[in-house]
Length: 146
Image (cartoon, rainbow, N blue to C red; front, side, top):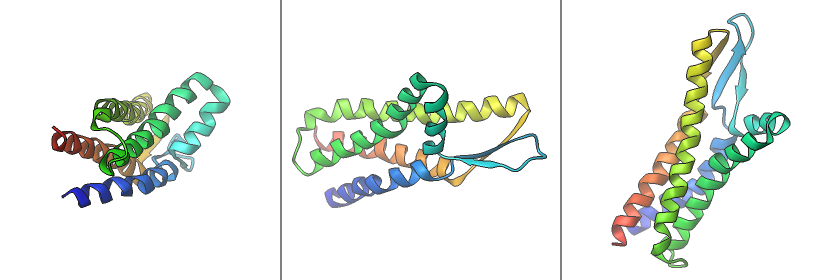
């Protein structure tokens, strides 16, 4: 069991960067025009040009929070950090989930306005799956360390 948890967590260290570059959604103006693919990274690039404060928040939620949480959990699993770190890692996981919520909210708002066409892409499912897997792994690890 411990071996499977460690491998699963280490896999997230590879899957998170893949999810950041994978297309989250395809968006375009009106049904007449082609759709552009948007990833976490391309979205962040656009945000840095227009809204630095929001770009900082999204960078924290989408990149740093899930990756630091995964690294922290790996350190605990390999005995390099104390299990007392688990509550802080759980908080990082919740922050990372906030990013998925924001993406979903943007999709709902854009679809509701009706001026643009938005389709979800496979990267959104991968990113969400990584976040949920990370949350699950930390919950299992916290139960193991009680």
